[in-house]
Length: 235
Ligand code: Z5A
Image (cartoon, rainbow, N blue to C red):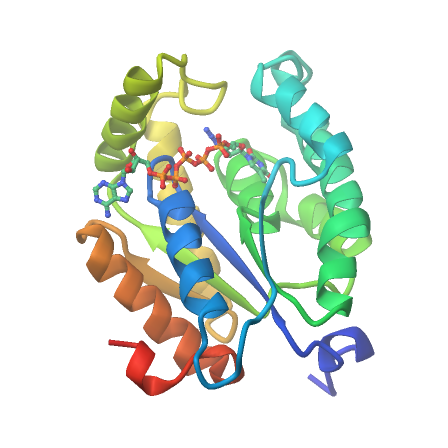
């Protein structure tokens, strides 16, 4: 690397993405990390924007509803990847980049690693195709840190199904895939972490929520120390 793009160097906040399989606890941990980052006693209140993919902006949320309904599945993984890319373009332009430019911390539930894992490793699209799409869509707005919540898919799916039953919602297009698909996803996220250790940290998501939250905070404090609230707050 000869140096980070100017946009990244000028980033006083941070762009943190959460990745992993179904029911890994991403939403739970984003809420908890946001509360921790906002309450930094030594640095005063900090703007923390929580968002998700697909979605995160009004136009991207409309694409989310369509793609999770399964409407694009008959067209194959490339068509689905293009729909996720279209949603991501709008999300980046209208929410993520303006937030980072203001100095906010952006916490995003899934981002381009999900395209690599779902449409690539599990869906069968070639990595070169997805890498080209990612270069065009994401450009320099790459995450500073990616937390990969890792657990056996059987456990994550059971959690997601229990949550869906309690809320009386039906599983979406991806939750309904076979266990083998979810095993490929887990392997794909672990491979991404292995290939990009400077950006990714794998968190054991089988632990109770408090222990996962502690591991998440430790990873943020280690990788992005300018974001960590005072040490007294980390316990
Ligand atoms: N997708 C794609 O294919 N390509 C792309 O490029 C992108 C996405 C960006 C979005 O679904 C789908 O889109 C996703 C991939 C695909 N696949 N699916 N389905 P989504 O946003 O609706 O769902 P998700 O991202 O998979 O998240 P999730 O299933 O909602 O789970 P989660 O956010 O990781 O977990 P949670 O909601 O925090 O927790 C799940 C339940 O477990 C809940 O009842 C918690 O109270 C409980 N929980 C949480 N943590 C724990 C611990 N530590 N122990 C025990 N119980 C826990």
